[in-house]
Length: 302
Image (cartoon, rainbow, N blue to C red):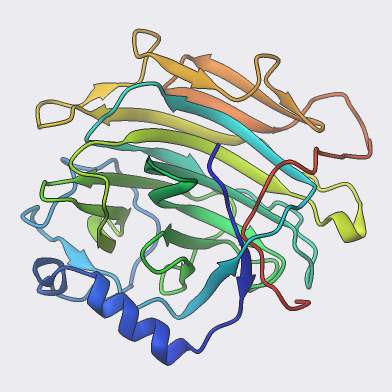
């Protein structure tokens, strides 16, 4: 499980400049997505990429928050799996739910995919993309987001009007030379969210997780309807046809019991179809978590 860090609010102008420098020129040359339409009504016609017909790039994120200090927090829950081997990318579909997140808290729920590598010396490089609902940014709303270790920011893409009941397709992959891309299938076309030159080479370990964090300062029940993750596929490192993430893939799971603080994971089909959310039949139970977990959160009181 990777280390996350406590946040500091930063100036948006400086952050946007950093984002521009971190994005390779080839990705910046794509036309801007108009942001119209809604969640796609059909599956992707093919894999994401700059040469895919209709491909476009998202506008610069409207909201972004930078993290630069480390702290240990309680209340963190991690449901899902990671690969024990290295791959060239991951794609799949996530359902969007209303997590009942409390405004002006450190609560959040997120469904996401990640590519990462341990760089040694306590440093991990990664890119993640998915949807999130947080207590410090647009409380009560669900957002498409990315996070990468070049800029160390949550980046929220509010041009995509996300709502509970939607499903979103995401694709994270590299086309080589250390550039990793996060794509969203929106309005039946591939939208490039970010492209980052990460120091992890052309292969990485992959994660698929639903994450929940309950603000330890304000202990309470957070109801998270089951999030469905399906159609999860892995791209081979070095190229080749993607394959479904099935039981023949060497896989690591966070908890053999598939429970974490009142949340449950159900493998419908290991490991490409599953759900995670409230455990059925537990009622309103208090939730606690080991203080050993670490998470990125805004430094000032939200």
